[in-house]
Image (cartoon, rainbow, N blue to C red; front, top):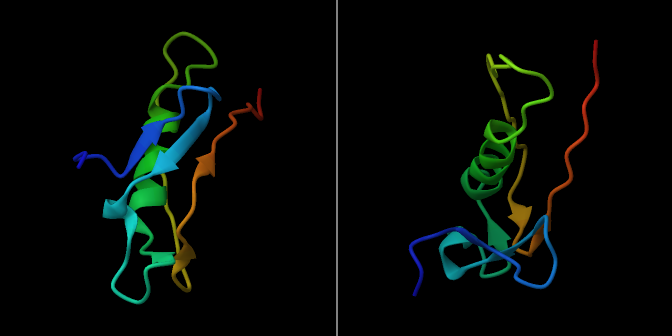
Length: 80
């Protein structure tokens, strides 16, 4: 078993395959907010819309368990 929550999909760039480690305590089909939040942080850290750009803060609020599934991540810039 991998030590990662998600693994990059070799067939689709920007898509990540969930591993068993994303499973939360509620159900085999649910995950707690930690894994998708960590994946979001991973992608945000690699975004650099301009030289010297630095992330100041990211906040994630979850009101319930998230469905356990593979995740597609797309980045875009709102900005200046």
